[in-house]
Amino acid sequence: MAKKVIEIKNLSYSYPDGTPALKSIDLDVSEGDTLGIVGPNGAGKSTLLLHLNGILRGNGNIKVLDSEVSEKKLKHIRSKVGMVFQDPDNQLFMPTVFEDVAFGPLNYGLPPEEVRYRVRDALKAVEMSGFEDRVPHHLSFGEKKRVSLATILSMSPDIILLDEPTSNLDPRGRRKVIEVIGNLKVTKIIATHDLEMALELCERGVILDSGRIIADGQMLDILKNKDLLEAHGLEVPYSLR
Image (cartoon, rainbow, N blue to C red; front, side):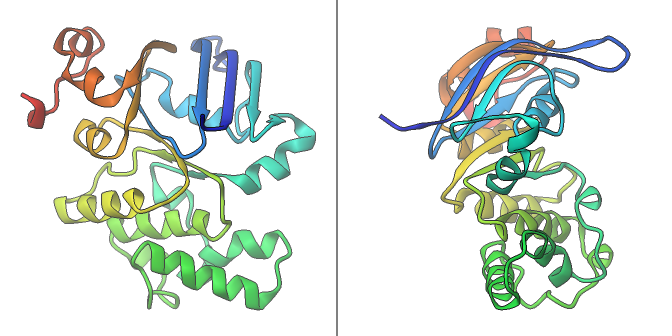
């Protein structure tokens, strides 16, 4: 039986204005899982991801890699849990691609030679080798998405959180991002509206709606359940109709 790498017990969170965002979430994730979190706009998908490396802090208990998510453990947890944001412009802020991808390892005090190896390997993994000297904001949106992922891979995380990784991409860019994510040999949690991608990449799926987990099971079974999906603002993917 695979080891649990994330354990969430009775997690609730409200936005600063008092609006509830997450309500009594219980969720375990095992090592090597690719978990897809789907649901309508405003369901709480991104909010849930932001709790898993301590960016947001709600009420309840979260353990990541056997460590409680707490102030004294945050640096350790963030070195093991990487978050790829929906908008790559929120992730890329350095003058060159190399500097963006090197930022995390340098910040953790790794020697320059090790940093160079990590940048090289991370860019190779996302098929962006040769872009080291490019200016990030001159890249296409799809290229920025892949460089954003490389900034996380350079930290050698055990868990990667991906928020809408295929949003706003053209078909070729979307296909490339799906291929890159599919090749990653780590635990992945993907929050997405792209149900075809979820079907392709995720064995397990969760429907989140109004801050609650509505369903948790095999992604294929969930995405074939027309009544369940339509009750929560979703549709059966075209490939399953």
